[in-house]
Image (cartoon, rainbow, N blue to C red):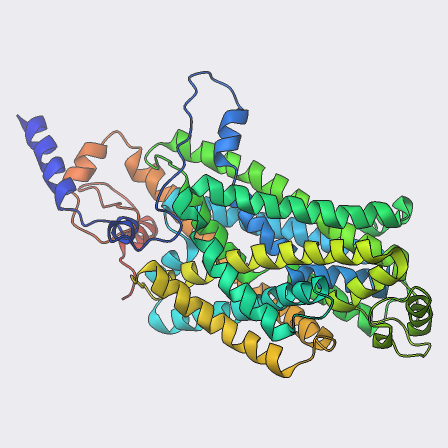
Length: 505
């Protein structure tokens, strides 16, 4: 009889428990990207690795990796090669490894808690620090989005031989981004396949440039694994800082922690959670390895072909080959300064028009894909920090307006040939926000540690039913409660109270 009453009490309290924020977000149809979830195939065989399961988990990591391939990264790569040769490849490698560690923490947060980082921040932080953190992330998103949209506009300008002005390319990018964003209405896997196609285009186009230039492999490996920068000055040091900012982006952590929620995972099963963390990490490693190779392609092309060249050399070659815009390069002996636009022109002068147009196609794929994932980041960040429950179109319109407005102003009042300074500034600004990344990851690791400790102490104990029967209602993301009569120290109860404590409104 006592056991039956305990069971009835547990069932009653389970029914009375309020729905989680995640359930509420999905119930009103306002959830982003999660109108459907990808099922994970079950395998009764006791195997450590399954390609079928890896394929089911493949998608979020590659969408996340697009932020490592946006036009800001491409411009940082080409300037690194043109200014420092192969000497800063080790900075790119180190930044990518650090980025992988941060992305691993972000994915684990989404898998373990069922919430993305912005939702956790809303629950754990008080209003003032939460708003400050949100504004910092929005600033990072706006800066990144300016580079992405303007990168698309430059690609349209190059492909049209200057017929489409910069502001016209921005408007085209805005319109087609809205169209592509609703591809997930036709299936989540179709959307992920589309992003995979864009990454493939980048790999093929920039890989073509790499094969055509044939860089010195010995110097490439030396620059990648020997941390040095002999003869580097302030310009190269600024470029190194810009590489860190271009690779490690604050909003990408929020994006990845949300994307992993698109897989069907039973979070009450420790085995499934552990398995999901494993496969997401493998997928992220593969995705970032691919993105690293593409970045290396760009650095190597400009390091081999244009490092140490002067404006006069480029001017003479462009005139001799009747290249477009030879007047971009003044007739002097100063070191060549390139950006995404001038980089395409230089490639066209030295290696023919095909190199220019292939370069532009790669930039267009980079800009279009990163603009879409940047929009998703903006939606996740805004709906998480501000607890918005608007319709999807309203949120897309708001987040795009915030990011696009300054971009459109730049496109109208700035010439396409004078954007290098702006991109350098934005990359350095992103690097300054790496501290925010590290702070977020520290808090993220704390939440994960606290969650695992609480589950191990309570949910896995033999007195779990008694624990549930003694629960009191809490708006807790973990649903842990104190076991009546359980002896525990004050410090242990403080940790458990942290699991229970509702987030500040």
